[in-house]
Length: 569
Image 1: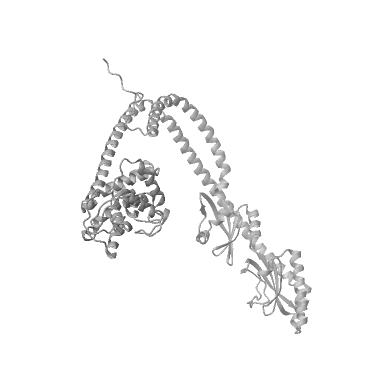
Image 2: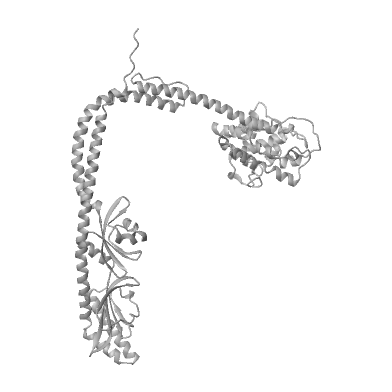
């Protein structure tokens, strides 16, 4: 009989390479076009900013000259000259106040008519007599001594409320210098908006490490940190997030620097849009042709993959890893993958079972090693584990948490391996110092388990099973809900087995008496919900596991056993 031919290989049907090649070529064209457009736009933006720089620099020079001429014209105001002359020749305080009021009134009139930011008049000593304008409050009370009182000058200075371009000229009468007149134009948001309108780009006005005004979006302004401001004069472009901006220094005047900033991305958007539309038309045609060639490939290749995908999904949802996946029969590669997956899952299941067996065996060996140190504690860890699982099941814990409780209870006293036999097996009541030694065993146990990664889920039980709801437990004095539920469960089971087991220093107590003691201390020493769950589970147990009933060796120490039963099982 002739053997059936194996399923065809993917490579036979992999003409999908046509689609990949088309996509690659279109992507390459798109990238080249995008880069070329951005380079062209970047150059155009830079040229535009250079032209704006030259134009605005010339405009600023003209503005400065106009401001100087305006200051010189206002210095010839007859009212101001008369009032200043009278002020200089009058010594009477009352008359001087009237003259200052006259000067202030005239300045208000001038500022209102000319829409000035600030206009100030000072006497020959530099003391400001009156100020007007919308930003006049920023002017100082004293202008200082000019190098040449009769000279008209312009400069950029910092004031309390910002930076101003200031024109200063002398007020003279009959050949004598009476004082000075200053005009101030604020370099602020209004000024920045004017420059933006003229240049067609954003404007940033900075002074030192601070931004005085800007027409850029707030998100962009927030990225202009002092570090970036310091390097702005030395760079031609800056990156703000994914956006790129071209930058030019228009001019620097005193402490202020004025920059024009234009978005390369915004400028490139129209050209990029046109390029993208052209490439999109080409892409639609190319992919339409390639799609016709790949329909058959898509149908034949997708079928076995879909079959395998559904099988894996069903296996994952049912968590049934025992039954192997059936081969599809459509593709050699998929069937090979299925067979390898089945082999892998079988190996994983076998390794998991072996690991779990070794895991449980190691835990039982550790518990047995502890119990072997003292014949009176033989079987204690197993009984506490059994009782803990019974309580946890009564409280509705899921299976995975029950497993943590079961194995954590087996290890709950593992820290006593580090306690000396003189203390651990003492046949008489413990001294206070010895009891402090015993109280170290939860911490010792936790340190032991931390060195074994797979025992990490059980560390809270080992470390905290002697904590009490009233905060009187150890080692941390946790209260109430601060104590994990598994640790509370093991605490109750541990105490119950300790009270129902005979020790060298006391008799065993029957189960009913131990249960009464648990109820008596519920809410203080033991968690009330755990005690209630234990009590509810007891009638349904075939046999409550309790300790042995061997005869007492030494006088009873029952009271110590009740108070510290969780410490000395």
